[in-house]
Image (cartoon, rainbow, N blue to C red):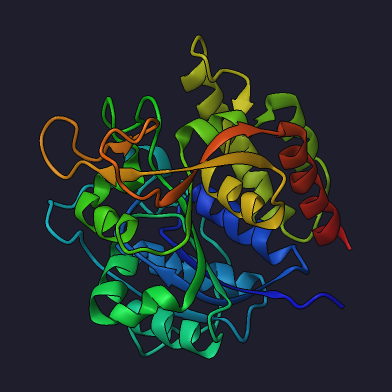
Length: 316
């Protein structure tokens, strides 16, 4: 049997974060060693509680759940409640659980688990990068213990929270710049990659219609709530498309052939009107060493197939 990939998911749940966790848990290729919560879509109070309840709902008894940063390193905190609702789940109350929160903070858990994994740990960061930055600042040797970091963040073209800034990077640009310049092998699943990887509304409806163990406690509610998204996106280039960005990040980790990549120098603007912009130096005008894999193209059908496979796994 193929050895399972040890994985830490650093997250700010978040509706699409829940899809991300469910997709990761559906795969027999990964072993989720820790879920570390960070403030982002909503406050840490809610992201931690959602992470704890999702871990309990999925039966992750051996997975550590830890609380991370309550606010960004420097900039004032702002959330995305307008998209995710006050509790991050659009008002859905996830099933209660007796799953306990780890006594250590997220950055210590990240370091401990990476050290235990002996350089084989994969990290998927699908929220602001505050926890990862703090871990790197506290434990400089951590960069040599992470086999690969895959982040959901950034944009090669337009942002979604400002003209240039994607929310996860914009929410803590200083943390993001620390992480990008740390020298960790990394992949950026940016907004452009997410726009290439989506389910049509018809495919999403078919997915939700595949009854499984999480239909009543999660998927049915999200299907009803999806009507709001469809109204909001009507008349835009994103009409008729459902793209759960954080799940795309896990999909990239599960299927290396989902995207094609180019390794390029990437930095983050930390101030001014372009704050939060991921600057991709396509021609390497600055002469810097390429530090990040950037998505060039996608096989959308592979992403759709992974979603359908998830429903099939949970139907058993």
